[in-house]
Image (cartoon, rainbow, N blue to C red; front, side, top):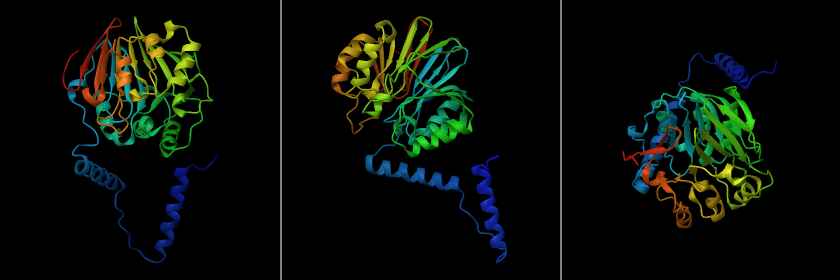
Length: 326
């Protein structure tokens, strides 16, 4: 049996301890790692307050952290410039879709605990960029997941991706590649994986997992960070009926290079949710995208904070972090 990294670490520590005991009986006090992490986080918050006059994220208001029983509940968390959503079916089945940047992980974990989450039935990480999976290792370590859905694309390696992969292995999740047309059922929820349509895109954002979720008569479409290139492939590959949805999680934080006129016309969402950081440096969402979505009711995490959508299978009711019901 191969020696694990934990047993190797233990052996190394033991050998060092034995060597040291030959010269002295004194024990060095070690500064707790958790205290170092806490101190680093406090410094980061202080710097943000000094430089920008605001916190690096806005804590969730408890008014949106309620579960409507016997209904579909969807939360689009305010994680700053990033994406993180939770879908909860009427039978309590849970799907995490992206995990936001690492900076938001601690606050996101608190919000999930407040919702009574103990484990994820499914976690979908659309693509391994920091603003989508920076908090994945933290959430997987805290909650675990039975199934993890990943893009089959090849991405530039990153520390966030490596940490995520370690936690996926440690929690024993079944890993499923998002192959176009693959269908899964979770309780009363039906998932249809639509993309990536190819693994040959030049832009890694176009390798994002795109998933359609159906419950009753309503449907949701999560599009990761796809651009117009991947949108064109979706339009060419699928019947318009598959793409049309009631609620669209707008691609790439509302970037001008996504949500093309043809795509929005085909999807024709009644509601659109944009996840972006307040006053972000990219100018998301782009005015051109907001114009293309003029026939949809738009919700934005940069203005509304965390958004809670509730459906009985026929329509949606929305609650925003400022307490407004829409």
